Length: 142
Image (cartoon, rainbow, N blue to C red; front, top):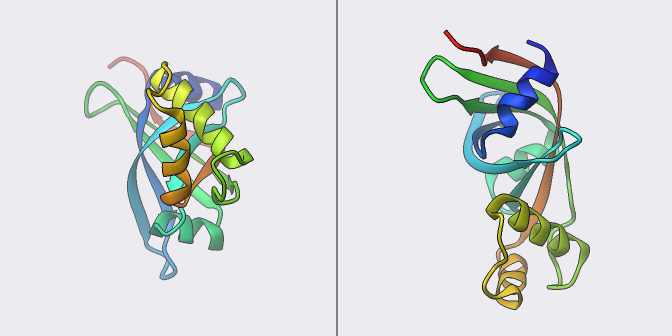
């Protein structure tokens, strides 16, 4: 499957399953919400203490499974991730990225940005950037 075709399919959705690699080589699957940027990089908010984050620090390879409107249509993007620093201050660069992620994903402003910013620090949030390099799946009509 052409990566451009896959990205168009993925751009129309927001929910996916992120697959990372556990220390024993088996997959760790996590339901996530993502925002696909114009450059084809998916942004995901993650928590520092979660298994997917620990796995990606050890091995940045990941896959993103995006389901279509029925069971037989899907796209899997394969690639690597980069991780931002963990949010340490409500006004740091990581929290600014999380604000941008929220705005892009929700399409609206948060009702209380000070509360949001503090929660990002308290939760130990960071930003995962998924850089797809290839794709497979069935994105077209049956």
